[in-house]
Amino acid sequence: MTDRLRTWTWYWGAWVLLGLYMSTMDMVMYPKEGFARLLLLNILQNLVWGVAGLGILALANRWPLERLAPSEWRLLLVHLLGSVVVAVAGLVVVWLIAIGFSEPTYRAKAMEAPFRAFRRFFTLYFHVNLVLMWAVLGAFHGWRIHRRLREQQLEAAQLGARLAQAQNQALRMQLQPHFLFNTLNSISALIHSDPESADRMLSRLADLLRMTLESGAAQFVTLRQELAFSEGYLAIEHIRFQDRLHVDVDVPAECLEARVPSFLLQPLVENAIKHGVADLARPSRIQVRARREGEELVLEVEDDGKGFEQGRRGIGTGTTVERLRLLFKEKQSFSLVSESGKGTLARIRIPWQPETNPSEEGP
Image 1 (cartoon, helix red, strand yellow):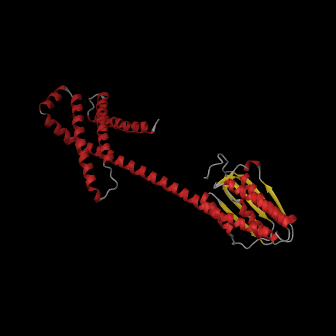
Image 2: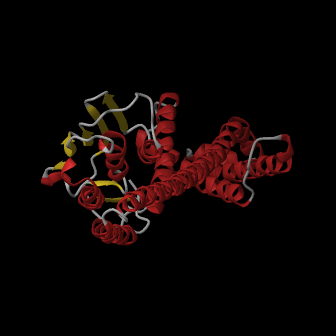
């Protein structure tokens, strides 16, 4: 059923139900009258009020009220006079239907003095039916205001989503130069002492930059793509640290196609190297893990390095926290636990989102 057909069904259905209700009232007042006759009479009369209501709706649509305020007195007057005119015109038709259903003797008497008969009918029913027309007016403006509020809420949500997307993109653009600067520092440290290793690092960096360009401005990628980027960065650092750096990746197959924010793991891996193992003479290990827990994806980066002071957060960590807040609101968590001499564990929880369309850019 289309929205238009549904609207008309509700509209005319409401008038028919009102006719049914009024026929039960008449049955109590006039028990000698047959219920079928009273039902037909009331439904016909209420269908007339339905037609009159269309006139009221046309009036309200032509001169809609924006707000109830003294400055709108002209429109209020138009609505008041219009509803009075429509109510009087409807009463004439309803009265004629009532005359047609009345007993022949009463009908003949009413036709002898039609003005007096109508005036009595008018006195009994005008105020009630005027309130009906006002109810139609109120329902129309209530629906109109509700629709406008929904449109405003939708616009606000769309603006909020675009703002969050722009902020997330800006934060991501902060991370990429930061990562590039740190990587170039690593290359610089080897360029004189070990030119061959520095050359390999530059080659790996070129591969990483190519991957960054291929991902474009996408906010989300698969975990498989994100791991490929992080492993590329770790390959660069492995050239620098040689046998001092060991990396374990434990990610089940079902998690590889889950959607994650792009450039999510790399800052955590970078922090694990820079703050955890870079200054250690002994071999160190970094573990990258992922698992599904119900409707959440849990990502962990853990090192067995020197640890760091609780409460300290670098650029990468702070930016990651802000991006998660923008993308997932309260449906995410980030924790960083460190113990001096034993290492650091970074844990992220985000909603589980299987990949459906790689071109999508929203959560």
